Length: 220
Length: 255
Image 1 (cartoon, rainbow over the protein chains, first blue to last red):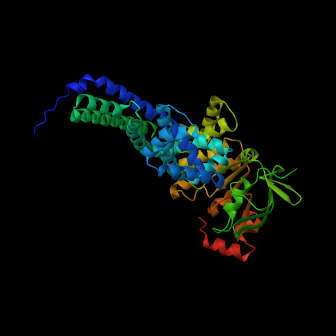
Image 2: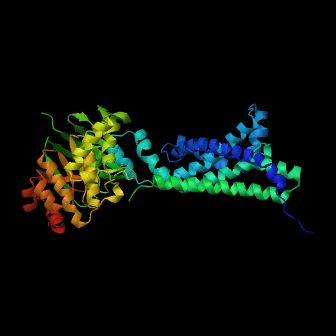
Image 3: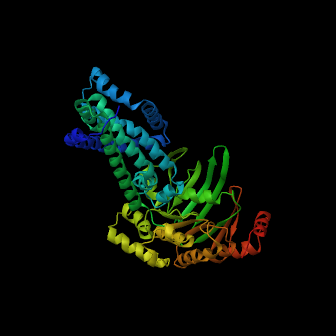
């Protein structure tokens, strides 16, 4: 049998795909911002001298990183309401994605933190800076520079993970594509276009991150 | 008049290993003291106790009569609050063997950081002072360079400017030329000599015997966690009283 490609149906619904894409991006941006904050706090917990901070940070990373993201998404959407936590689809998904990425970013940031020579902290102490001032002026800026490449790939993964929101009927890109696919029966065309949109967006994100890397690079 | 620095019966342990076994030392305003001794003798550790980069388990250190790091009352001994320790650290300035400049900041920004964050100066005021001190170490033209764009000797001079700009009562130099290529050692030593001529109080841990001989008003020889000999540099280098020092001087290069 021969199948002739016909994109007309997909183009007719293209604005739906773009709406889906912008929701996907929105979900990813909120999740990465919240995830970075969670990750940063957790990373300092992981490298802390105090067991009371290390333990809970370690537990969080272990529990979240070792659970499939789809399970987390379904858990927070279907199980949390049973426990009395009622969130909308979108809120529930963004929160899940933020908590999920926080665990990964914590490990990324931890790697960046332990790579900083101890002399940097000592030099800060020697001029009378407090630990908090050392963190904000020295440790975090240095750590962020060294983790930018892995931060970029985490962001890209995270953006792609937004497709899992389709599982709870959040109208993002994958959900919209499936709808068009079902309504138009143009299976191949729909998924080709959806894939291209993902690839294009990810490539843009990667290019953007490389620019940030170059901008922040320390001259030598 | 109280001494600038008063160290009494200083004890420091790493676990079971005692690295300082009761060090006593006093220093007057304006003195330049070199601390020499073989590696592992405790000289760097002693320096790092003075600005609390190392904790110590026994004894007291006081700067201008102010007890550093701990509050002692009778037998009770308690670490001071971190904020207070941070403030006390600013009484001293330190230059490190590995320079430890902040790599993501220009030379000027390195010097300005403490002025703005600790001394609460305005950025303009801090910039003016930073430029004054960078000029003093001969690097005003490099103020906008990053550490990675400077030679080791230049980095160390910026690091000294960063410490001195904070206007410390006492400068601590921790083997500041040990990581430098031989041809870069001199420019750093010249800067330190200039500070000595200005009357800066300095404690210098060094392996440069010729420099210690020339710049110091007093030399301390440390051996196995104790001060084994101290005195006038001429007498110590030319007529060592202890066998340990004679042996140490024989093995060190005096050039």
